[in-house]
Length: 205
Ligand SMILES: [Fe+2]
Image (tube, rainbow, N blue to C red):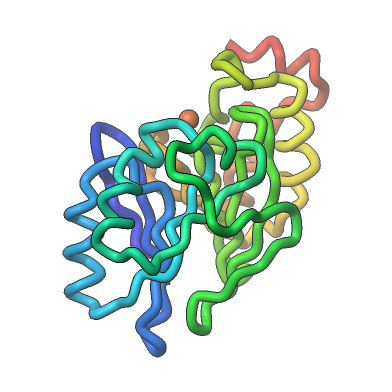
C-alpha cells in the first residue's frame, strides 16, 4: 500500500506499508514528521526504513525526528547522495537493489540528473516513486549543484520510459495537474518524456 502525504509547501512524502505484517518505509520526510508518525501510529505500523530519493533538504529535513522516535529505522540512500546527508545512510542502494517491507517488494533505480545520486523506487511492480526525477508534466531541475541535463535525458530515456505503462507515477512534488498519474499517460503527455533528442530536451522552456 502507498500513502501519499502532502507535506511542507508542495512536497510529497510517502508511507509504503504492508498492512499484514504491519511494517512500513517512509520516503522523503522533508517536513511534517508528526503527520507521518500519526499515520504510523493509527495503522499500528513499525517503521523499518527511511528512504531518501535524493539529498535535498526539502526531502530529508525531518529524518532526524523520525530516527529519534524510531532509532531502529534504517536510513536508505544511494552512495553518491548518501555522502551529502548529515545523517549517514545505513543501507546503500544502487540499480537492481531490493528491499522488502513485509510482503511489499521495493526495487531501486539510480536516476541521476537532478542530483548525482538520485534514485527512483519501484513498489511491487505497480508504482514508481520518482522523487525529483519525474513530476506530473515535467522533470526535475538540472541547473542546481550536481545536476546534469545530459544525465537527466539519459535517465528519462533509459530508466523511466522503459518502465511499463501501467505503473503509477508518484512524484516528489505536487507540481502537476494531478497528484499522480499512469506512466503510460505521462509518456504521451509529459514534454520531458516526449523529447526525442538531447537537443530537443535542452530546448524545452
Ligand atoms: Fe530536489
